[in-house]
Image (cartoon, rainbow, N blue to C red):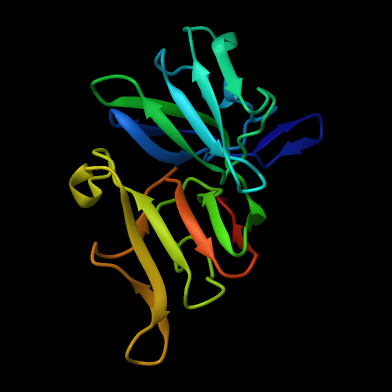
Length: 216
């Protein structure tokens, strides 16, 4: 907690390092930038040739962002504006153009209090945890599926080791078990997300991912 002239701040400032393998990964911004959450603030230092794809708010198409040079002003947008906000919990594809792993560093405030992230109904949402925390999507990260048909699709990259890191999607389905209760099922093991991992969430009904999170 910071204090100055009777002004108090409960902000928790931190950074998160995320290792990205060559090619595509799905990640999300896990921290709140003090100003605008635009790319030049959220990801100011990435390799030349990096590409980002985010899912349009209407859920029908992608926007793309290309880094053509090494400076902050060299991000270029296709189908969107560079003022597009990459808020905590918003998933997006990142293409690492290198032939080796690259570590991207997010810097900002940890979001606290009662948090809410919109989930589209009857389709797919590219999403992630609004706080830098790993664990099970329901018991640790606080997401409650709306129906037994809810499905999570994680992207298999070399960095997370899913499915041998061969690319493609690893599905996890939420449905009834033999004891009359719902749980996640997959041939790829337990559904446990890493810090700053983005994923596709398919829901039958529109809902909000609501949770209360406090650091102190």
